[in-house]
Structure formats: structure tokens, C-alpha cells
Length: 246
Length: 246
DNA sequence: ATGACGATTATGTATATACATATTGAAACG
DNA sequence: CGTTTCAATATGTATATACATAATCGTCAT
Image 1: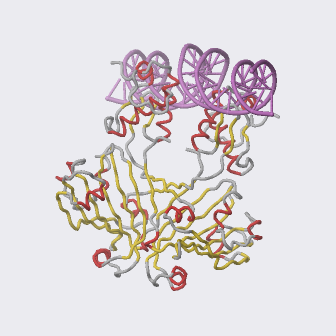
Image 2 (image 1 turned 135 degrees about the vertical axis):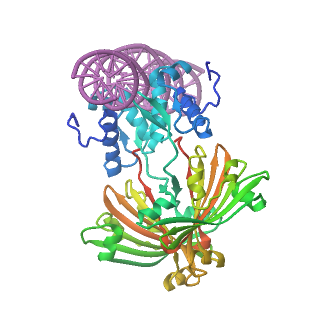
Image 3 (image 1 turned 90 degrees about the vertical axis):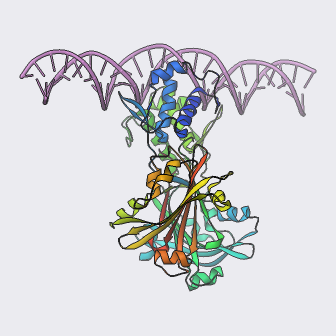
């Protein structure tokens, strides 16, 4: 009953990688249904003629990826799909526009330094008052407005931003590189354009827009809140979901 | 210069877990900037007084998570943030509605078995003709329509679906559990409600809607294409982005 | 029957060791 | 001076081994 040996689909070269992909193939194809018990480590050990540590490495990764569930004394089992989580790629708008083969341009509409009011603090998630920077700008694709950006920057977290004039480059790309690593929360919804938005985006008032709001933290400190408003025709978000395999 | 020993923030108990969280804390806080060289494995070995395998396990995981980059002979380095990828949680609509404290109800509007036409094949990504199931249904939150669902099921992949009447349970929950594991692609956009949609959702024609389209494959076979149409007020998608930590 | 208890078992973590591999830096050479 | 060669080095992978831990099963006493 010795399997493999000749390798089905060598995916990475190392043994534990092959064990991993062999098993995930069985699960993803449905050959091993949810609830099915995966061979014990010592069985795989003889099947692949390797040590338990090698098998363990593969199974641990499968468990972390959420494909299997491991229970002491009982064995490892195929989990049933549950968390419908998808990976949403959020590109820089410049990239997005240039991918369409159009000329990108950014234009600042308004910029204002002020002491944070209650609404600012709510948006940023701040408890104490402090100064913030408010920026409104337009992203163009060719001649057409592509997206309206409304941004609030917490100057306590990024004081250098107070000295910048975001005239022709948006604050987003500027912030990346300055802020080390970040956590972010996105909210996506549809909205009807009000007068001001319709005017800026050159669309009809009441026309549907896609709104993407992002709140960003770095090391627990709120950094920025930004709202992108896209005319419905100009943008589609794409998210992919694949069970495992980093 | 011996650090830790007493443990800063025990996050999981095991040593390699602590090493991992110690280092990721340094990176995420910005203490170790992008490009910074992380101590060599043998240095961490003496710092934590453990074997190289233990250190290696932690660093390998950090590398897989994308926080660091490892180069032979040179060492490991903090990567700069790049791929703005966020995890989008897509819950079952029933869950979504019940989380709002409202009564959930599903009502089928239309169901039709037919031979796939060109549009069906484009939506599902099928090359050959075959029979498909078309279903339209409404999800209610209390008395109000919450979302309109338009679904196409590839009966070659899920023949049993042809015998079902999706009268009071939506096809989504039914498909999960029947289809082993899946890959999915989502498209999210805004749209103005046309007459038919406005009528079904009891909103004004032209009102903004959020549209989520999902294509699903299982073991390379197209399974279903579904379009959820939400009135703008009824739904906000939330996506979170955190650099690492499984 | 039922409950307590200990043996068994599979996984979880860690160790010391070994060799492979890629890359760097320096020495040797033309 | 430029090139080749080689040794040093850090990571990558695998092994055999050890003990910890949790869950299950059978046994035994109540």
C-alpha cells in the first residue's frame, strides 16, 4: 500500500511541503469529506518513510490554515468549511488607474489644520482632543474624476504631516513609508451622491456611489481615517477566497 | 544582557510562540523599522536559552506571515508593508440579520431549470453547455426586504440541487455542507436599482444599492454564481487588516 | 449500572545533531 | 586589475529522541 514515492505534483520540493499539498488536495477535491479522519502521524510516517517531526510540521500547518482540526488521542480530522473569509486586495488608486491604461492625476481641493471636534474624534477613534489635518482631494483617470478622497490625519500620531502640502500627491502614498506597520478596518457601502459629491465627481446628484472607508492604527495609535467615494461605474472591488496554502 | 526570562506578555505559552510575539511586537510598534536586521538565529538561541530549531520555528512563521524576509548567509530582515490586503468576513445573511436582532425570513420568488445560455456560461465560467438552475429570492429582516438574491447553480457540478425546492431556505446554506471545499471570487460594486429590483426591495427606482457577486468553484469545477443586492442603507461590509499572527 | 482511576495513545513542544544550499567575502590566480 | 575559486556562514530541511498533555478506554470497586 505504499503510495507516492514517485511524487504526484512536486510543489516546493521539501518533503513536508509535499505531504501538505498531497493532503490538502485530498481535502479540497472532496475525496476526504469533512469529518474524515486523516491518517495518524505514525501512519504517514511509514507511508512517506520519514520522521514524525516532518509529518507533524505538515499537519500543524494544515491545522493553522484551518483545513484540519487536531484532537489529542483521537487524531486529525477534516474540518467543514465555515468562515467565509475572503482576501480583499486594496491597491493604491494610482495603480488602479494606470492598470486601466489611463493617465493618473491627483488634485487637492481643500486642506485644513484644526483642533479635533467631536465628529473627528469619533471617526478616528480618539478619546482626547488634539490637532488634526483635514484634506479633500480628487483622483482623476484621464479627464474624468475617478474618486473623491476625504481624509483626516491625527497630527499627534504623525506630526510631520502638518508641514506637508498635499497638492499633487495624495496623503495615502505619503503615509506609507512614514508609518511603520499598521492595522486597518474597512467599511464598504453604497451611497447616493449628495450635491457636493456630485459636483466634485461630475455626476448627477442621487447617482449611486461606492464608499470605502478606512481607519488605520499603528502601534495602537489612530493614524488616519479616509473615505474614498467612487462613482458606481468607475470601480469594482475584487476579493478572492482560497482555503489555504500560503 | 539576558532579556525576557520573566515573559512580557505570555501569548500561547510555548516558547516559539513567545519568541514570535516578542519579535512581531517590535516590528509592529516600529521599534524595528523596515530593513532592520533581526538577530541571527544563534543569537536568539542564546538570548532565549533554547535550541536553534525553536528559534527557527518562530522565524519561519514570521516569514510565512510576511513580516520578515529571510536571506541565506545574510540574515533576516523586517519587510516593508506593501500588499494592502484585508480579510473580508462574509457571513450568512441569516446570521447578519439575526445579529441586528431582527427576525429572518427567506422567500423564493422564482426558480427555473434550463439549458445554459451564453450569459449563464459567462457568469459561471463554463465552456460547454449543460443544465443550470436559476433562482431568485428575497431575504427579509423583520418586515423589510434586506437583500435580493439572484443565483445560478451549475447542475453538472451539483445535480442534487435540481431536485430541491428552495422555498424557505436559501440555496447558499444548502450548498455549504454539500460541496466539500471551495474557492471563491467576489466582486463588490454600487448600482442604481432598476424597476424590477426597486420593486422587489421596496425602494425607489434609481436608489443606490450595494452589489456583491460571488463565483464559487470546487475542485476546479464552477459551482454557482450568486448576486446579492442590498439597499444602500441596509448593509455595510467590514474588512479588517492585521499584519500577522494566525 | 456507575463512578473512579490508571494505562494507553496521539498530539504538542523541545532538544541535539546532521547535512544541504545559497550567498558572501576574501584569497589565489592569470 | 579583473576573474575564479574556495572557505565561512546563516538559513533550510530532516532525523532520532524525550517528555508533557489531553483525551479515551478498559478495569475495577462500589
